Length: 283
Length: 256
Image (cartoon, rainbow over the protein chains, first blue to last red):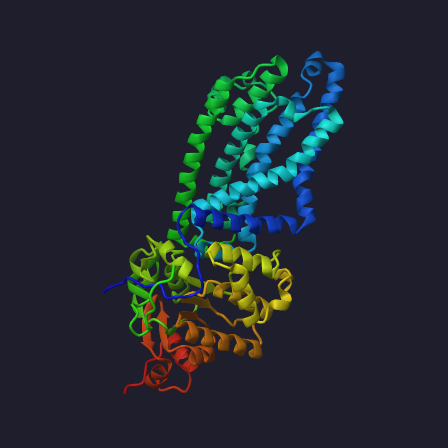
């Protein structure tokens, strides 16, 4: 039987393949999330709330320590810088994962999966949204850090760009794995999306040097790109040194992790299509 | 994207399903289902809870991959090449919402972009006028009544003027007047667009009115596949609802 099916004239439809078509679908989905963000000021305030509290708490602690210890005095900006960078990782991952969770909470995932949106376009849209949310959360907090404690994150210069890029890439890897798990196991895996980033907190040396970790844990820490960022921050603040090779190595690790995370996401998606999880999305 | 026009009778079948089977572990949800739909037809897929109709529809949409068998939709193998067909089809279900925080206009814009509708503003205006939702465009979807939500969902489903429309309980939870209005719209759309419609519904009066073919599933298998009229006659019943109850309770058809 000839299964070729001619397209019957209908509405004027734009081309469905190629970079323009992909960009249009990604833009459409980003607008969906943008409309969600702007529809609720409490949600927007919530984006800023925790980073602001963290920054204030660590900022005042550092101000106190600076009066009592010489190390803290030398390391002005060490805690605040650590907090700001850690929040970039957390907010970017949550921005990615929560945008995806919105689809499940609103029971819209079926519509997306039935639309011409490709999986990689969904991922690119989530990445773009994570950057938007990150900007909404971190720009006011960075301004407050400057106003309250005289810490200007931009004074880190090119190093800040390198730190930022590496942290955001790591956050996307975490986002891919956690949203993949939600695809496969439904809202039963939602807490994974909220908590996955905190698994890294003790290991990636946000507030203490790598040498503090026990020997057996250090290779694990060194396999995680954020460790290089926080070590890099300390080297910059305490010694005025910036190691470009370390940042490049972190970037290489990120490329490897994000590739694995993408494969994991596709595997979870295929499993969801095999097990019927896409039509049973819930707890 | 425009192709040559083909009359529905001469057009290749928009849906070809062959020996379709889906196992979930030890449970067989769909068991050797085979059917071909004629272009421009309205087919009702019926069955009790757990009969396999949701799984079958999900395989038609490519949301579930079959354990074995084939599903071709608009010429595309849905297990491997679903993106060749997805922009030419659409679906509506009261069990799949559209984002509640977005206004109706925002939702329709987003879906127009996802489907690649050219002049989406013009198309949205056209659909809104047709479905009488122009006055609620600026209201969040979550604040609408059930009837308004159904009309908006239908607008979303018609944005790309699909050649194939999958409808799951299109009039569930609607008052009789609104339900009748929705049925009329669907009939008119199918007729004007020569679209193929697959309908899953528990409303037998609706199925009798809309569909020209009924496929009944029971425990994942097709147990009846006829026009509503022929089915009623064969079972010696007055209504399709009585036929449905006969099949669901293991009744036999009348010997003719």
